[in-house]
Image (tube, rainbow over all chains, first blue to last red; front, top):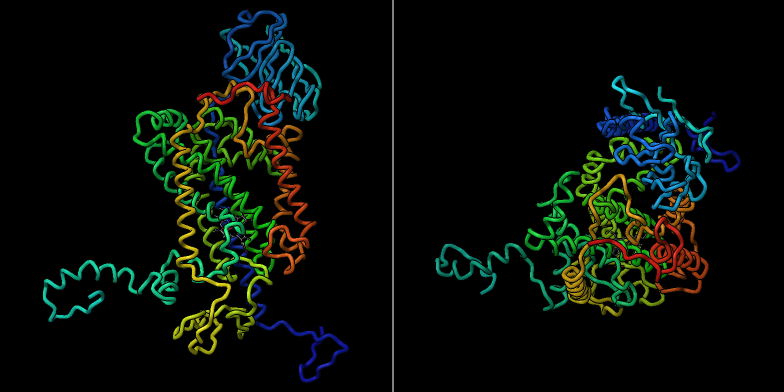
Amino acid sequence: MSTYSSSHPTNRVPRVRKTTRREFLNFVTGLVGLGVAGGTALLMGAFFWPAVDVGPSKKFKIGRLEDYPDDVRVFFAEAKATIWRRGDTIGVISNICTHLGCTVATREGDFKCPCHGSQYDAFGNVIAGPAPRHLAWHPVYKLPNGELEIDTSVDLDPSKTKKAKSTHFIKII
Amino acid sequence: MPGQRVDYETSFWEVLVNLPQNVVKSIWPTEMGSKNDRTRVQTTFNNLFLHFQSSTCTTETLRFTYTMGFGLISFYLFIILTITGILLMFYYVPSVEQAYARMLDLRSSVLFGDYLRNMHRWAAHAMVLFVFLHMARVFFTGCYYKPKEFNWVVGIGLFLLTLFLSFTGYLLPWDQLALWAIQVGTSIASYTPVIGPQIRYVLIGSTTLGQEALIRFYTLHVIVLPLAAAVLIAVHFWRIHKDGGLTHHPRNVTPDLGMKKTVTGFHRRKDLSFPGTTKTYGLLGIADASRPTVQRQLKDRVFSWPDLILREVIVFAVLFAVLTVVSLLIQAPLEEPANPAHPTNPSKAPWYFLGLQELVSYDAFWGGIGIPGIVMTLLALTPYLDRAGIVGKGVWFHRRRLLVNSLFGAFVLLNIFFIVLGTYFRGPNWEFILPWNLPPLGKG
Ligand code: HEM
Ligand code: FES
């Protein structure tokens, strides 16, 4: 960079001025100030981040296999999930709408959401409405005492498609 | 004698007699009222609260058909909401176990509880309406041009705050409306690109709706958002004052009245028609020769006291009377207690969000974030994009503003269209339905 003294004004070549010490220091001070402000904001943001999620447990005891009639989809309200026994297998389908999270109604042959009208077939695949993906499938375990437990925090088929890759009926032995 | 000096020779009897006057004088040391122009100015000028507006205003902007008082009404509603809200806080408990029962208490056992709750709710609905109407009037009269561009942006901030305030407000009863509104509202937030799920987690303080969500929305509703709104309203009013009052059409006002080019290039209205007082803006760096202003006839201007302020008082009286009658007669909605397993069917937001609900029923991202985000950004940028400028300002539906007014008009009509669609044409499972087939809504 070259500089031109102001005593030699010329309108051909643009005048380039050296940054003064004051300007440089102001710039650096500003930068440091911004950094400190940004860092503080981030830390304050972290304050709003709960370290532990104190929400209710996502595991539910649902009784025994024999409690469920064969091939009837039963809504288990507490877990917001539908239990579907087929022979000695159990499928657990989430009732939480994949659109905006309303609880869908388990109806004979399908699921229907009251909030914006999404509709799913009996297996939770989207057939109508704004829902972007199929309903989730949850795992089911047999406890030592013979009771069944489901875990609604686990999604057995996280694919983002309207139709699930497969159904997840789990054999209870 | 009023204002008589009290010295040691004054008898104690006189001190007593003058006491009331002296107390009043100590609070309002200058003469006020409509005696002469000076007292008229002083009425506004020497009062912290009234001085938010300047001591004179143009007759043109005083016409009711110009502003319709929409901004003023929005402000009054904010004040009424603050007061009734504080009163409700004395009985409300932000706990998922207690909140709903507290609503029932307000209805049955708290003196005026019902009335206060109704007024708080109806004033909130009215505020959303009037802030929107105010925005529309500012737009259609072309009042966001230089130097008011930024005040329009402040206005957009206030509009969003008003919506967030009402949203966080109707969650507090923890009834069905509350539960499904947070469910849907925070799920919309989780469609934000990249950080969506994190936003939702911070908003509700958990992955599942419950106590954490309620206390967060409560804190936002009773302190964070109202405080932010109060600050923005103060900025909004201060800017109107500093920018020389409300916009008026340049042709309708005698030019250059009291305007003066100052050292810094600002146009300032000097104090007008009374002799002997001249403001110098020394502290603001606009020091100007301070000589007594010559008596001038105010053609297009009147003093804010009494012309403006009395009108403002009348608007308040009417507004409060209407609100009182409505709150005495119409119960604010309260649905069944929150039930996570069964949303009401259909589950509808309050009317002002039904347009949005209709939009998200096509697509969650575009309806809830994409389109609203683009529309609000465009609205906020309007004063910087629209260059119809000085010709079209200060008049309703000016011809030079045909294009922008049509665009904004389309925005208003689309809003109404979607709200009507969501309100009257959507039945159980959000299916299309004709209004006369609608099931009766909202128990209680
Ligand atoms: C809490 C919400 C609001 C309150 C309390 C409020 C209050 C006011 C008041 C009292 C006035 C004086 C004129 C009148 O009454 O119309 C005014 C003017 C104005 N408002 Fe608002 N306002 C709010 C929201 C908005 C919004 C949403 C916008 C636009 C996006 C806006 C933009 C403006 C502008 C540009 C002016 C100046 C108008 C002119 O120069 O004639 N305000 N506001
Ligand atoms: S939440 Fe189910 S359709 Fe929107």
